[in-house]
Image (cartoon, rainbow, N blue to C red; front, side, top):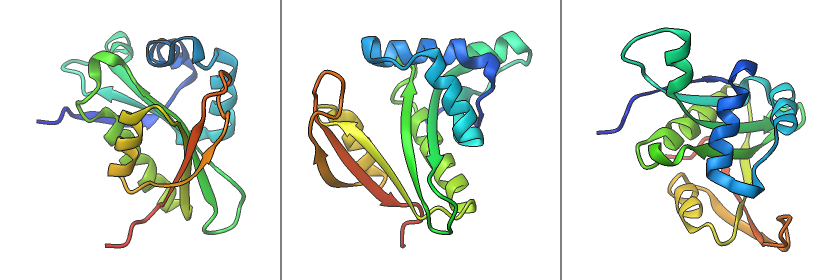
Length: 166
């Protein structure tokens, strides 16, 4: 059974927990606090967090339940404009329980309401689990992006319509 998650926009007071998830997920390639603050300003309500539904309430309990985040940004102002999935991460202990799926499904609904046409991303070519996850959600490989990462690793650009045809 898939765990239940509350998906909502991130708050500045959650940056430390987001950084913990980031470091656990990406190690030395992790984004820093300043970049996350920049994306909070730039992407606003499309910087989402995933929290396990707590058994009890309270500020400390809410913070401890945060288990993932997703950042997406809209490009341009016209209807049908593209969006970019900047980053998504789930703490290692919570992986495989639906948090990333809940985040992606939520951002797709939010993007559809805002009139976005496509969602684009770049994923490390060697990250097979992430590529399989995105393919499961209808992303298709567009091209290889040589030396996309700081360590000169290649990326794969992927894209999908925000609304898939049924």
